[in-house]
Length: 500
Ligand SMILES: Nc1ncnc2c1ncn2[C@@H]1O[C@H](COP(=O)(O)OP(=O)(O)OP(=O)(O)O)[C@@H](O)[C@H]1O
Ligand SMILES: [Mg+2]
Image (cartoon, rainbow, N blue to C red; front, side, top):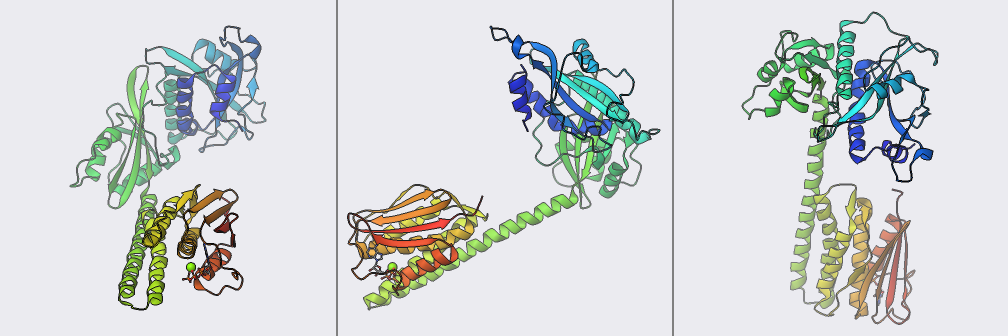
């Protein structure tokens, strides 16, 4: 399905700033749909391909293309199908043409029965005010209300509909959506979460039952209607902490902003939508949502994250202590073989510590393995530097790998590098990585090469056994070790990667 941007670029003459405006409109127009109990369809003026002049000017062909659609969460929909991408010719939809030609909201006409249910249609021209004060019209919103379930409207419905018509007026005047409102990360409160309507002075004229409940949970005992919301909220949420500056601005409905207030263990999200119609502020809507549970779960997750990180950190510290102890012990040993064995153990433990250290920074399911590999490679090179002067090099990238793969792979790599340095005494040593559906790692050296009678299958020494167990067992991969053409040895590890 084409995106809003696709449709605008391909079929209309709207520019980038227009597109931005439409993006913020449709990211916020759920509000209008919910308050209207109506479906919304955004129509943009189509450029007629045959009418595109040689000079490159685009001309409105008179037709329309539907570029976005929104259903109400507060009432029945009219359109069960997707309308986006539909084209309407000039003259086919009078209300759209009229709203566009006359630059005004149109609500005349009898209910339309063409979909089988009575539908009231209204159209709203979408205006964007350019920085130089000009108004540009970008399209028309068609608002379709399914009347089949309409009954005598309640106080709630009347308030919603009045607010919807104020918002529609703001769309036509280029005052909604609010430009420059910070992008909202958490889902904003919706109409159904709780709605208050304030008058010009910031006094509550209507409170939906959910909104009232949220304020009850914040500790309100009195009635909300008639109260000055800014003052009431500040009193409820009074604390010794520095005053939340947004609180007064939002709760009095003076600026398009969001904030969160907390009292008695309840956390409530407030979003103010100032209503500015005909050049004057007539009041505001304040959407309200109790986010106590949501925030509690977030906090829990955060502490869980921190705990896991701390555990990795401690495991790393403990492993480093083990390595240090082994190193001490190795120094005291007179028997060279014993000493070598212990030193190797130090390196094995060290490579696991590296993985835990990485995980202690980012305890995610994925780690950047290039960082780990480079440290494993450096560690192998360091240890050998006394005997051989070779710096192992990495070619190609491992990229991001699941942490489950990281530990065994780091250990296997350590062993293979150690072998090359210990037995091959090479002049060059490289780790060549290529990543496709599998991860292929080639470690080659130009050293002495494998002994005559070498056979991986029957080799009983510990190092390669560890590598085999890790690669074939834990990583379900393949291991091969063979003479390198031209001298030296090459070891390949081929590991299947889980589907992303
Ligand atoms: N890159 C290499 N160049 C030359 N010989 C190698 C190379 N890699 C492995 N070998 C040979 O394979 C043998 C087995 O290696 P393996 O790692 O299993 O044992 P090890 O290194 O001798 O002892 P350890 O268990 O301490 O690692 C080595 O002894 C060595 O002869
Ligand atoms: Mg070895």
